[in-house]
Image 1 (spheres, rainbow, N blue to C red):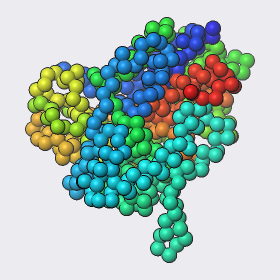
Image 2 (image 1 turned 30 degrees about the vertical axis):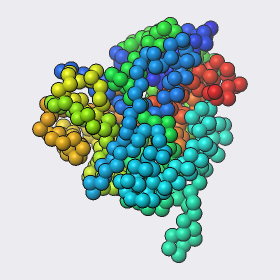
Image 3 (image 1 turned 180 degrees about the vertical axis):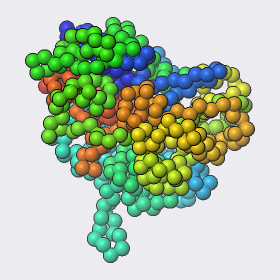
Length: 503
């Protein structure tokens, strides 16, 4: 039985802790805040309950596997998963609308034909076939296996873009998602639909690789799911599974240093001076913080993927408490599109925010998140630059951007301003406080192509015995990918060099 210290109580770190405890190890989690869950936070006021992180779950099989492998009670016996149908309602800048059914390719194609004209569904369906090929090529190495030693092969673009003849130039293949949107989907509404998937994950469609096509493929193939009571309930279920497996938690315990002995990780030192011995250390926090915890120690060799040198985009969220019942026909998720996602991304990611934002409006039909049926809890979210390039402590800026999100959402929620009781903005500063990520950055899933610049560091490091879990490690951000880090880290510790990936 090994002693294992886990830094951070995010869902990826807790997933690793539960699996390691089941394997017979003694696991203790040290969390600098007073609660678990990391990005899966919750805000409550006057009977209203809001998620402050991800609002939906994709690839629920990752968490079903976690609960099957760590106990007798399956996931669905502990939380109620509800398929979101329609998966999304889209409101474009010119007023055109389309609702896309959940996990139904044929239904999506029919809806696009009805809303955008004959042929739109066929064009989108042909795109999804190519996206499926990219998914099949990268699913194992980018989701289910440790990062390959020859990870450089993932720099190649896996998306099989058809060759396009552009004016008098030689035929070319789309290299970015923006080019896929323009060349293969013809721009317009279909292009805007594709680009919003990149923007949701903090990616610029103009620079994101064509392989980002796997993002809409995953959603439209495996569906979107909501956890009754809010996504925080998923974090609670994982936490309670850890407790049932005798994982120990120490809250308000910031790790100041990772201890090293005989060339390997040997425990942690807390900010209050407490020394903790361990045979393995799992870091579930932003790995850039390891430079502070291991000063002078090189963790990333010349042939390894290093943590991102600059802060990635973040999210700006507005929580709305509304009087009046939620209409029965309201979509759970509505995307109010900016006139141009690429222009918006380029402005937002540089900190200018001078383009209209694309706003996601979440309106769950869930009695647990509202005081009664005569009120409604609504969450608005937009992708923004992180704190640092933008001063998100500037109250005037926060008020201005809050108003921009509310103005956009008013297109989807009739009489929004008249119904509003109060609103609460949540900026990248709040995300940084909750997760410890620099600038409140939100990690995107790892993607192939783009010269391997969108990969995340391996779950192993240059210090034997020190491992990485959570959204900032391979295979990256998003609830499903972060959850997979738990399976990968546990496999690497338990099986060592024989581990070949999750089955």
